Amino acid sequence: MNDFSGMDALYRDFILDHYRNPRNAGTLEQPDASFEDLNPLCGDKIRMDLRIRDGVVEDVKFKGRGCAISQASASLLTESIKGKRVAEIDAIGKEDVLENLGISISAARLKCALLGLKVLKQALALKYADD
Ligand code: ZN
Image 1: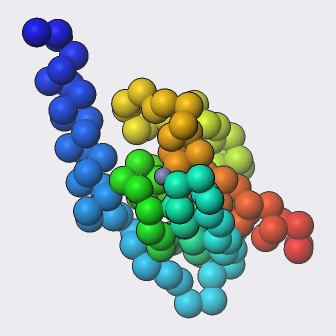
Image 2: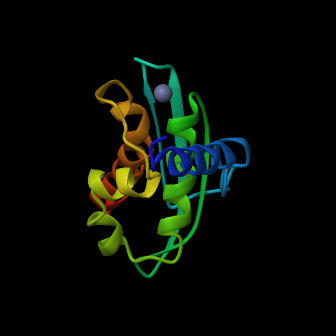
């Protein structure tokens, strides 16, 4: 028996829960920022819509399909950015997303785990490029 097996099972349940019951699922009408991208390696697709007021993310929705890691990671990300300042979101790195997932992600699944973050950063980059 290894001491971490129980913990791994817990984290898998946690990821499956986000996959089956994604938080902030859906789209926003007239979002202030929006982007959609895919990970052709796995067939994952994610769209993220943001409502931003005075530099704060008031609301966020995401819509996607694909593997559990990609969808759970996006769901977790939307939870963590709601109510945050755009400057704080700019500071979110890949390590933060991987840490939130709480399991070790193989190199082959990194693009799955990080697709949500990529979409989020692109949405913000486009929004602030327009201003
Ligand atoms: Zn995937």
